[in-house]
Image (cartoon, rainbow, N blue to C red):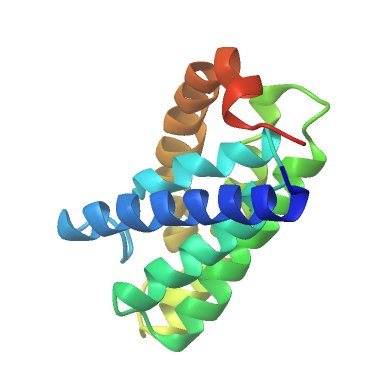
Length: 163
């Protein structure tokens, strides 16, 4: 089995799952706006298991933002927030899994309120938007992400194969 093919395939699967989950959230009105609870953000726990999740999450978020009609600044900076969160989650992989949701939560809390204010003209204060985005991220990354972690942990050697 070729390492590059495996890496690209795993990344592509993660991106595809991210897009599908975001699209479902978008249909429910939860993917974008002042209050966001993207089920797909639970996948930000995956860099704790594999580096293939880093490009997978970034591409998945980028495609999701394009497909759900986000503004260009949201496509760019929202996707970069996910990339930053994924990289730092991967860097924490040798520490407690309970630390893994913190980077994507912080990245989104710090970046997304500015996107909402400047790309969409949301008139709310930065701190208010940080609280609403943070609450959604705690639900998505913190609660759902940790549930996903504990569901995947027993099967990680089968799901996240390496060559």
